[in-house]
Image (cartoon, rainbow, N blue to C red; front, top):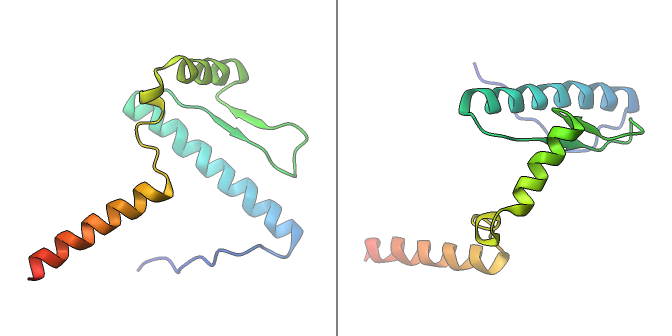
Length: 105
């Protein structure tokens, strides 16, 4: 039996919203830790929230700075390899629809 669909809208009750945020943040950080362990990658997370004065940095501020510095020192073509703007997305979708149309003809 699958889970029900989650409605994406602001939770009106402040205490419920805070509890949901804490639970989801914990799950996100756990998944990030599993990803780095199982796949052998380096990753970091910086989470800003209205509930905390300081942002939460995972795994630690010094390690996150090292990850961001390494990313900043990498060549520009590696940093933007998978970045797409609206024009590129539309062009890709148009090409995909054209290929489907050719198959149908």
